[in-house]
Length: 411
Image (cartoon, rainbow, N blue to C red; front, side):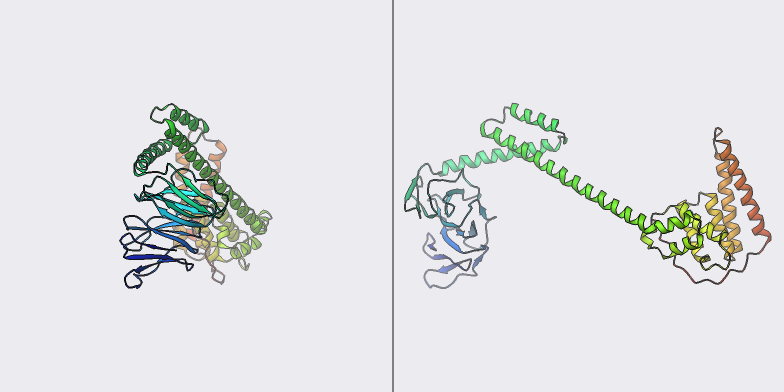
């Protein structure tokens, strides 16, 4: 396809190479780089009456508008045809663009906005290969592979286009108002139904504006429903994934749990040391304290599983998780320090454990269970006796052990 500019100085050509070229009509030389954007053959090109815009139609089912001076695309492609767009033409006043297509229809477009004007013109029984406006712009002619020509009347004029644009601007204002109102409506069906009734009763929304407003309500509600469904599906996926991870973790940790249940502390400590740190990242303070205390008190000094540095790390983890507010856990840490030969540190931590437990006993409410109070007093007596032992004796010489990696950090 080829077309002259209105001043006759430029020729535009559309090609099977998917491009539009501009040429100097006097010299035949190309003007700048080809206009690129179409994804298939360019079947038709046309200049606007003022020569400022070039329209192109393509087998990619789109129409594109270009700035004739710069070759830059103007907005997004015009989409609506369902098959090749074979012919395009500007109205004499430049306000309307007509396009003929292999989908057997003709479409009219607002040349300034690229918006479709009304419904497609239907009547041809085969592809439309050519369209042209009458000089006064009120009639459109079309030629088709069905061997007929058709004439179409009441083609939008400049005045009708102006009215159309004003109406569309009003519709957009309605959409903006409704979008703001919809944002304040909750997600319940009742709330949406109430807004629907409010729109129907609003005197500002009459005729096609009411239709536009009600469509807007449906669109926004539908979008929100889709968004809710998408979020619900994502939450369900996350829950299923979390359940799968927990089940896999339980399966991996089952041997360690069985060893603790059977009080096979040598095996339990070996399994804990070999476990993936991520699997133990959420283990509670009681888990770490039990491992540390049992390793210190239940295993013989020469047991390979009695790694004192590892047990110290477990005790420190339990203390960190309880934020140094549990006397029994602090007692375990003091014991680990003692077994490692650090008398001064063992005494310091044991005194801290006694202070914590003493404060808990003093702060207990008057109506606290007597059994709980007695248990704390008994533990306090034991902690004090252990402190006295630390102060008068010397710690044992620790058995040589291999260094062990510390447990996972406190999350």
